Length: 114
Length: 110
Image (cartoon, rainbow over all chains, first blue to last red; front, side, top):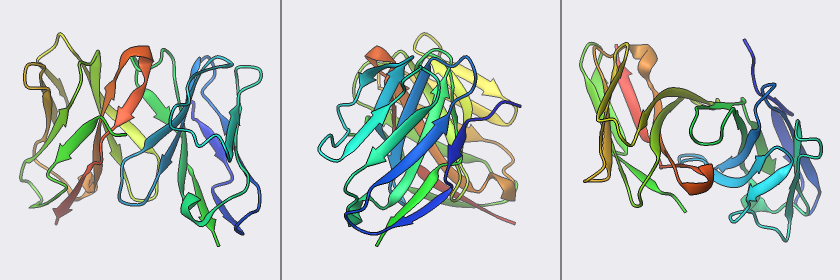
């Protein structure tokens, strides 16, 4: 069964360091989402891609976060510099047709900033 | 910002009982989806209900949607210990943005 792949599963980084997360969506899925989830809360949308284009990054802290999906397939989310408040689960999801179809989630990357 | 709000925040029941979770949202939607998340894992899609539908079933799950009240409910019948998880509603807004609520933590005691 096709899955959304994310790596790494866990990441511990020091404050002010750079960190990157990678996501490989299900083949053929044009829509890719990055969410941040703080423990005990719901996922918060950071950025949404349609193919290689960003369609929504209104909640992305652009002074430190960046995201790209250069060939419209896999994607990278970067944080530089990391802050203590960035500690969270970062979830990637993909969908065949945006929000009109179900989204498939990866297992997430648990980030701890120390 | 979160579009949906789940109620209750936490629910504890005995195995075999039914569990009902509610979701309220603020703006008009195209569809509403329910997801489950086991501790520390990714989310799993349960069911999608479109704005022109009122009720949908999938196995032991029953979802209703009342667009006039901007609310939805998820009913899990004959609950099992394996149903213990967090349940989230998600709404699809214009531009296909998928926005999640804060979730209901369901505990099913054996």
